[in-house]
Amino acid sequence: MLRFLTSGLREDPQPQLPDPTQQQQQINPCPEPPRSPRLQVEHARRLEEEIAILRVDLADTRQSYEHKLADQHGKLAAQLASQREKYESKTARLEARNKWLEDTVQQLATEKAWLARRNDALERTEKALDARIGGLEEEVFELKDENAALRQENADYRVDFDEVVGEVAALQKAASAMAERAHKALTRPKAKEGRKEDDAKRTPGGKRIEAPNADLSGETLTRTAPREAEGNEGERRGRPSTNSRASGVDPRSLEALQTLGPSRNVSPSPTPDSRRQRRLGGGGVCAGGGSTVADAASENVTVRTSRKRQRTESDTESGLTA
Image (cartoon, rainbow, N blue to C red; front, side, top):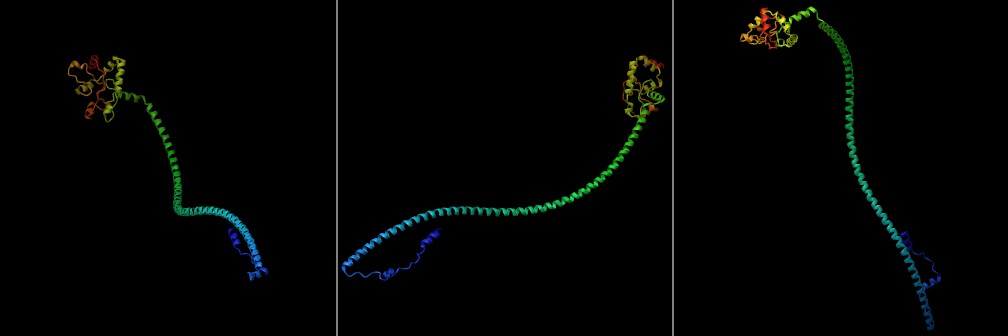
């Protein structure tokens, strides 16, 4: 718009066709002055009046043109200022936008480079995962095969286990039957065998002892609990029962005990008076199972001293007289 206005002001006015009078005046710009002085004075006065009128017209025209130019200048200045502000603000916005676009482009370039690096890393990871998945699939197939083999083996073991369980049940049943028969056989012994075993466990003096094993071990010879029980039973029953048993003592057993001297089973008797108070063993060295005192001595068996019932003078005398 500013260009249009400036171009409009700079345009030349269109040429107008000159009048013939003006052409004549241009041809003769200075008419010939009159020759008479009076006409010359009038002519000079008329020229001055025309010059004054032209000056006034020129001043009015100049003033009007000056007003017009001032108005146009103010309008154009205001329009130019507004357009300048508009274009300056627009330029500032464009510069800011251009700067933002440049920053965005730079950021996008950086992000693009980062995405390219990440894409490469993801591709490498994908390849590694593909390889790992392949290995895992192979392991899965191997494990499936192994699982199938283990299931088959487990089924075989189950069959064998069922067979073994059946055999064990049969064996347990047979063993329980055998144990029951043995228990019945042991709990119901014959009367004669019971009497023979009872007689074998008694001494010639009538005391009950445990019969030793064939090996004559010290543990067997030192079991004195039955003798203690028998002694306690004798004490509870009283002396008459003891005397009655002592009357049947074999003198040979007494001689055998005396020949041992200060043995493990008989207390030493240095004087005849103290012989009455010595403690004689009811069982001594047991001769059960066909063994004698000499055999026990030859086997070098250690015999533990046991509790013995002290005999009174009447018991000793009755045994000697018998």
